[in-house]
Image (cartoon, rainbow, N blue to C red):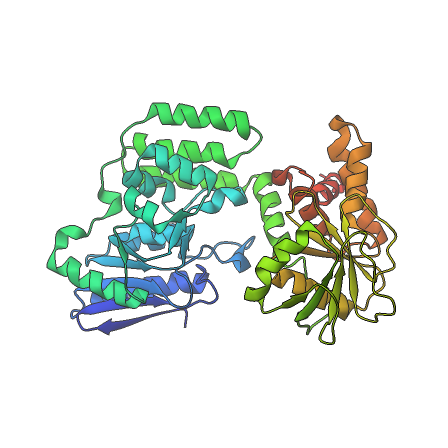
Length: 470
């Protein structure tokens, strides 16, 4: 069951259980409405607490529903019902409260967070804006300037800053959100003035200077983007609308405009592309190597050393009897006669024709690495990729030929004005030759490493769109 209700003494507890991140699926939204009705009808419950199981509060929308027709109840309607609750309603936060999760909390009458909690409205990173009241309720708590900065950047806010800004009302030293929520609920019952309905707060003070400054910054730094400018319009509506409901209607109009934007589609394409680019298709069961030899010297090895202990991986400077995988630095001498799987380390743009079965291409900016399968078994590549992933590297797997080097060469040979077109043409060749496991891997590398415009979704996606009849 995604949401259930249970009373503890005179406190009703609405508990969300939708692992791994308690995303706001249709079942969760429906469950919240049903549990709220049960709590309101429970005469012995004098206050209600909303909390979540597991390692986090609600971390946002359910990605499994992306692109599907929305199903009632929609999140704005759920949050309106939470806010209208006739009993004090407390949100007990832990882990992260992001996107719709923070909007759920803003619809409650009091917010307490465990130490280490982070909150934020990161919808802009997907070409969207908060569409369930975030642009209307947050400014009522923190003012126009801070709301604009938070929502247009999509950054995560630590609990201490959230408390100082007024996003949350308290930080609890309790061990669990259940303990924190019950303690606050009792305190609110003892002093009802602690609770407040965000939507009933006065509209934020007009701040035309903050609006103008944000628009100037966006025109300078992100003129090609769509959703940040819609965010400014929505936040401005929190000041100019005659009522909260009018502001929410304007927010919804702007949200739907973002949903229809090609940029939203491109950014969500990249979101999915980044989910598992380290996975080799058709390899169902694989484990990371636990004993790795780093042969030679390279700056990357320092990064690996820092992550090794937490990952439970033993790193040595030379192969020994326990070694399962070798990582060979450029110009390092390979141990003669070793039968161990070996990854030859190469920098982007350099190919020495290594005789190793696997090649690791490292981007100059350190954002990603590409593990190319030259002649290894798929299982060996997968195990090596899982090892690098455990060592905190962002890994993309490929085969036969480096995607990064192919894209880099195309970019270098093109003029500045033709660079995007050159990357798009190169991406078509990569896919045609079968060098990528997934076409989205090309897009991910081009955006994260070579600076292809993120909002376009990547060169292969663009080449596909251009070839699609309109």
